[in-house]
Length: 355
Image 1 (spheres, rainbow, N blue to C red):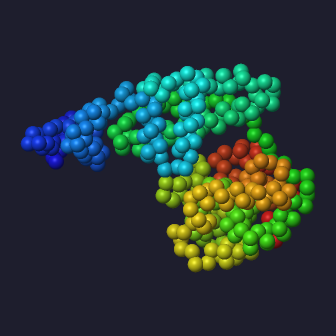
Image 2 (cartoon, rainbow, N blue to C red):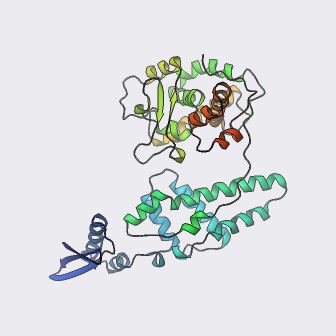
Image 3 (cartoon, one colour):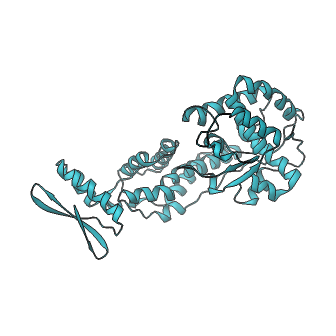
């Protein structure tokens, strides 16, 4: 196969059944041109003329929303890909946009239509608050289909989309509750004491507990933490592979020497490439936290449905009390200090961080 450049873009030339066939790749990127040409000529050799024609004319005006979502699930590496697709389908279904519509017909108006529809269905102030939170979450999931990383992957497949107006449309956020320490003042100390048995009964849940309570880590950070994160009495939360921290915010969290010693005991023999938590993806991402949440419920952590996240909030509140709001913002990995102030502070709390 040979390539020539015309007006900056590459054209591939290949011999098929004794005939020279020309294919305009429509890109100045040599690597992408080779990828497109290989797919096109392979389709021709397999006499899949429909596939070849589609590759030749691939653009937003010929790709349906349903086809794009098929491509998204094929290319996405996140575990939530199917959930994100369902969120988009739910929005489209409720506002009456069929999956057979082309991608370039997408408009940010579908979000506002979805928002208005859900708000009208709400009955009373409490239901309206819930609706706002649900709508914001659903829209956020749907927008993941058009993340910067996914847009690049679509482009690598020869599909260049322009959905800025669609991505940019926002909806009203539902209220989030400020952290309030539980009324049971002995809860933290009792949980810490009970965790000694958890260490024996369920070491993986115990490690997750330590990460939440003593390092303020998010669930996704714990599940994706590798042993390379653990350096010199600190946890360095940094990207690896396809995973990155929320908002891309890297940070280093110092760890009390006693807790550090426990981590080292529990992970003896692991290499830097090993995950902190043992087991397959489902075990690390779901099962460990399901067991930990059940255990926290048994200890009396029933003041919130997001029990593991309450560990992080308790840590953040304690850091703020001891080191100030800037320290709390950094150690929690908040991009905006107002998030720390609004949702993670309760100066009346009495939290046991070091034992």
